Image (cartoon, rainbow, N blue to C red; front, side, top):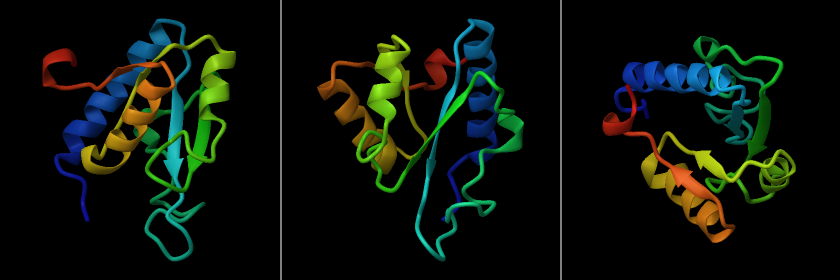
Length: 120
């Protein structure tokens, strides 16, 4: 299923990545592995980070298999080891944002969900 308002979302994500790096912080990309034959199967175009987001050497990657980006990954350890207490999350509200946000809050992270009111 196509992502709703994909061009606008991509433009906003690009801006957020640029602002994050301008503040001297890394962007931690989370990729979903949908499994064999899925549109987001590992190493397929649907799994890759959009080139427009231009991952840099300072950035990191976390690969997940379920909507909750903390489940079965090293995300919590990476954030804690870098002293990061706030996260910006999401793309699909009813899946990944919901699961990851709930888990992040339960782990003591502050969560920022970008919206039209807080993205220039």
